[in-house]
Amino acid sequence: MAEAGLASTEDLPPKAPLVEGGQISDHRDGREVVLRLRGIRTQFGDKVIHDNLDFDVFRGEIVGLVGGSGTGKSVLLRTIIGLNRAREGTIEMLGVDTSTLHGKSQREMLARTGVQFQDGALFSSLTVTENIIVPIREHAELEDQTMREIAALKIGMVGLPADTGMKKPSELSGGMRKRASLARALALDPELLFLDEPTAGLDPIGASHYDELVKGLCRNLGLTILMVTHDLDSLNAICDRIAVLLDKRVVVGTMAELLEYDHPWVREYFHGPRGRAARQEHK
Image (cartoon, rainbow, N blue to C red; front, side, top):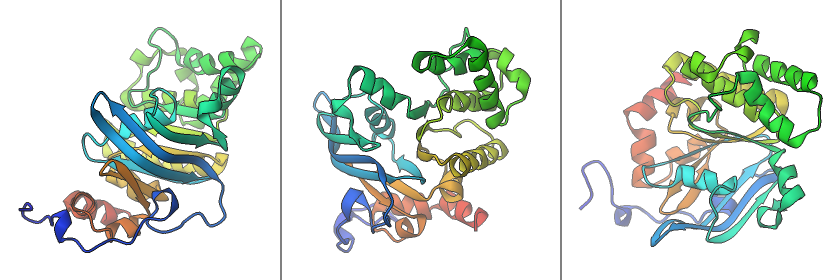
């Protein structure tokens, strides 16, 4: 029997089949697909996390990736960026099958993407400037002064004071560390940016300011952003579409489409008290 307030999947009316890329309805509208996943299967031992998962991200959009505990949000992100290997399926990034990338071609692709990990993953023994220089030094042959000037530009771009560059991560607040990590992710002027729980641990005001920063960077730099998050405010405030991990696959739609989507977890998540409050706040 279903829990009170939640219909069982057997009780729900049949849903219309998803269109290409796991979408509820087609939102491509002629845009380039910069990230395409087809038939992805991830597995650890006998435990299958994702199975036959399809997912598209279009150029210039911000997509939020959500799902319940254990659905594999971070696993999927790590698989996309190459830290985990999918058991089956293909991942095309910026028009290239990532399984064909090796050596120079792999480094060139890495230079076109940026990643901000949930905890920032800054090197504790390096200053913020030195942290930002790490990917620049790896991918570009530039004079030290030029790299420092680029780092200073990125520090300003994410809204940090200029003297932040001289500080080590331990000297920064949690919000400042997140911005410093974002500055490093932007060091090589990426086309595609991956964010893992970027507002986790921030107070509501700090999270709102961070959302506005991400939205502004996307618009001003022409970025495409895939963001793992559980923050309903972020989903309402800045995401063009939302990808929901359900039953080892993904369902992608706008907020309006997902509010009409019949699935117990989707209904509980988006129609619960916090979901209603977030929608009211961002009307």
